[in-house]
Image (cartoon, rainbow, N blue to C red; front, side, top):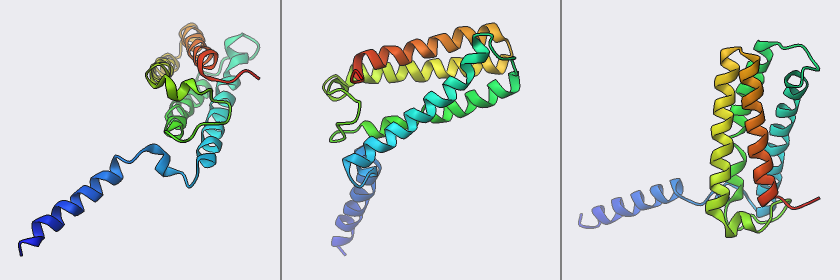
Length: 152
């Protein structure tokens, strides 16, 4: 019976390590992580771009459509980051994503905060607030791309 505590500790350790394993463990190979994050970022760009004609005054403002689109963006904004784990270098990501992980995390957090502010603006139904928040999201995208995305 003395081995029971050791077995319990080992089982707990294994269970906890699976929860704290690096994000890369979610992908069978690094190329899968690259594809995943590129797909997530493409969807973000698509949904963000759909609002641009409204924000620019080139399309009528449909508050409900904007609100729904921003809700999707809010969900999508959580997706790509797990695919930037150690060992997932490649794609359009510059090496600085990994060598300056703190700076990259700061840009990621600013983006997510700006998405949350865009959600608040969309929920308000005020197009001027949506425009301002939309611009801030775009600026956070550009800031990250300027620092961490390979030039095309």
